[in-house]
Length: 151
Image 1: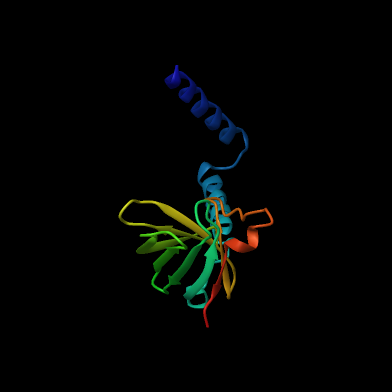
Image 2 (image 1 turned 120 degrees about the vertical axis):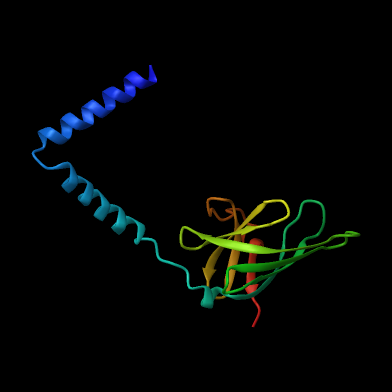
């Protein structure tokens, strides 16, 4: 069934290309040009501007907060230190690499587990913790998810 549908799709595409009066190579070139324009539309993030140490206290469900220190480096590496306030053995550290997604979202990858954490660059002085799509928190607590650059 799938082979039949695939053959029909190929046949329809071939007929469409033949009926337009344009050569297939010209159509492919036009599509390539379009995709190049689309891929360059997303502005890139200047890591030299973003690099630095960011600090703040993030909300937590089981303690008063998580004191967080995030250091971003120009070589796309990071260090993350977190202290869970009023919790015994509540210290966590991680380091690894980060990727820039959609121009402003940083995906921190924890090498030991493959776990991802996401921060969005608000401006040159702050980042905010987001979900995997870069959506910022919307509640009254949203400002509590912001880490400020240490000068």
